[in-house]
Length: 372
View 1 (cartoon, rainbow, N blue to C red):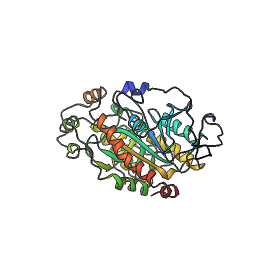
View 2 (view 1 turned 90 degrees about the vertical axis):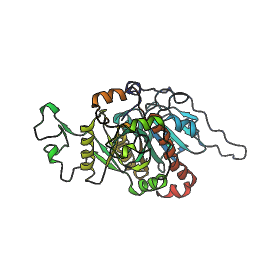
View 3 (view 1 turned 180 degrees about the horizontal axis):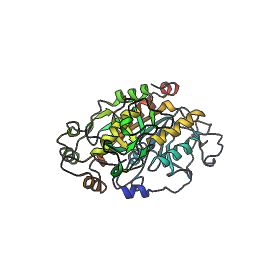
């Protein structure tokens, strides 16, 4: 994944546990509203909170409010997530809106943290998650062949970029274009057959749900800005990169390594194509999504979550490779100082994701019973 300042994000900001404010019952309603104030994290709870939508953010830059917005801040402030719920078994406390029953979480950066956080939430008996929809919403690097920074892509496939074999590029055979290749193959030139996907290398998002979300948002107009216009203008050989931000369908590659460059972008395209058996198209680079999908898949096995109710949406904060005549190292080091598309990506991520959240909440009786 690509972040505003890599060192800042990797350091993280762990929110200290704080007492949960109970939801008060009205005089007209003698039945107390759900509260988990007297339930210990992870322990049995007689009155779990109902959750309609879990908004899964992966990081926040600094504070949850009042400074430069990372992935979580806009959701917290604009969605009225005012009820803090201690979550000591995860990276960051949870925030909840008792009226809309939207729960917001921050998993922390990387596959390990995202897997652990989703499993911890799913096994926490303070929450009723069996009918919940999960919206994984984060920023990403974006392939200039497919879109511009600020664009928002709904993933059909989530592919893992870590489970692999690797030989240092200085030692690879002359006819290999990369030293990184899939397990159970004999090198990068052997990646043509049907892949063995039993180890979590690829997850397919519920096709009908993804298509529904894309159709619902594909005509959303996203704002342009001089900053991102100036950045995309450098990509003279990439027509899609020069377009103003737009909504598209495109698949995401999750890898713990912060990679960059034209050659690795070529690798990412080949990798996603192989693991999706030619049905996927690499568009965004991220870190956490295969961890989320693995955890939800396990939770689905015991009825604690519904695997078919997960959506993954990523917005381009920067490109996965440099523009013509700029070397990869120079561009990557510059990007680590701050991403041209950060503000646009978090804003557009919220704008597009909110269309889906509003539709789910506005017609909950229908969507609680069955996915679109």
